Amino acid sequence: MDGQRADDGYVVVTNSEEQYSIWPQGRELPAGWRETGEQGSKEACLAHIDQVWTDMRPLTLRREMADRTGR
Image 1 (cartoon, rainbow, N blue to C red):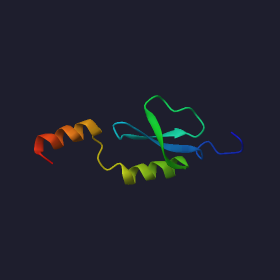
Image 2: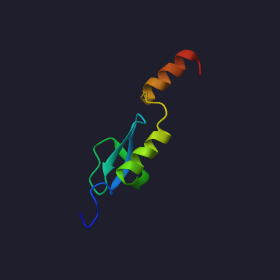
Image 3: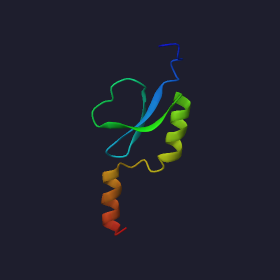
Image 4: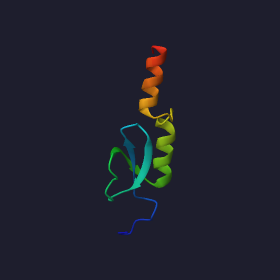
């Protein structure tokens, strides 16, 4: 791996439902996912996700619930 440790090359990715995951750097992303710009070790990427992904519900569910409550 070009001298990198196996856990040093990850990117944070998100999908259209604003769900997050990590993906190995340099590998093609699965359909429907895009990079957020955050990268680093596995631990650093997961820590970032813990900070930014505060509502685990998919975006469509959040919107539907907001429509029902008028928020």
